[in-house]
Length: 240
Image (tube, rainbow, N blue to C red; front, top):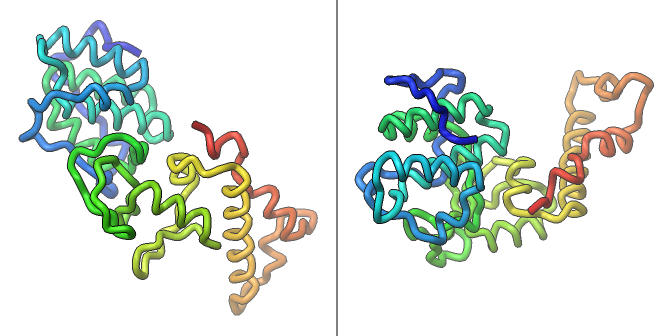
């Protein structure tokens, strides 16, 4: 999807999505003129590259596109892939970039739960909370700020019995989006989902005043049937 031919003089951002938690990293306006590296450009999908080519031609960026613009396009493309940003909203964001409203797009994107691929280069060096090594790739971060490198969080997912962030006293449970970003194998993802559901069923059965039979589907399906039905689609997990 390229840039729309007719661009409004002052495109306005919709208010369809209220601010939520900020993404793991955020572009800084002070680094707007930093040129994007070839490695970073290599992570842009084809549709985003077409948009970037239009922006480069429009702004005359002879030395290359600013890194900040590439980061924004990456987040927009990722948000669309994760179902957070519909196509029409992406087009409006592209229109805003075309007329120079970068700050408005930055503020809008910052309020969305968009997690980038852990292997994408980071905007600055950071320290993993588990291995304490310095890293230059995005890594993985939970909503409570626990930032881990891809290797550490993948080892945790491989060995843990529950899909929970390994940060101290952290109650965040990894979502299907997290498993997709970490390229968790299908078999392991299904095993983790079954464990989570069985734990939830067990907790429900122990809750005073709650009838566990009432939670079963019509027809009296067994917990085993519930586990099978609730497991995420195999094709949606572990895809690369």
